[in-house]
Length: 324
Image (cartoon, rainbow, N blue to C red):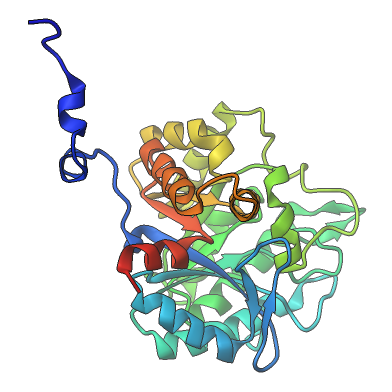
């Protein structure tokens, strides 16, 4: 009897649909990005990212303890320093804000995975991701300081260091510095394919790191390039990267799929601030169902090949699925 094949047979009930589901999301695959700043009792809302805050170390540890209890166990740290200068010195100071936060959270949540974003842009007074020479980022001077920062972050308690600067050769330099410091077990999670994207806008408010002149197109990737992403990830693997990140996620799902097919290491995708804020804004206006759209966006990222997803929605997703 026609038709013999009836795919709808497997869609009849929620239980059956769940049984045959191809892609799934678990809270332990989510990485929650956070912003930490000096002070006490700080929980400063970020106007362009509803529900996201800048935290002081004391409020952050309480917040992450709650999030950890929901099943999200991995956190990505960004810092807003008390002082900025041309060398980004607080990035590699043992007393820098991220290092202080890492130590505190490590003590409170010893089983958490603490990932330290590794870049100078939040710490330089010009907002670029490295040391300037003639108004251009000097690649080789910058990677010296990135390697120094990686060692300081790891000693402060970072489980993983995540270079996001897009300097050439930085993974090799960081790996050598970590190994020479006896930190051979610290993995490198490289932002290997990081595009010069317009979707980062709200992050500039959160991290207070907008460049004071120009932009970052001279070192972040051109959005039009696909095969260059494969070149970048393979170079980082050769240099010692243990995990890779594609950033942003939604406009680059084709890149994510290509990367996952080309490598045999864990791959993360970063659902960036602009992706988060667009969904939040549409949901607040009643244009979309927030929970449904978040779920769909995350499953799309997983379906494209992400083993892990960096997302500001991590605590909310966990609450929706925990019943808390």
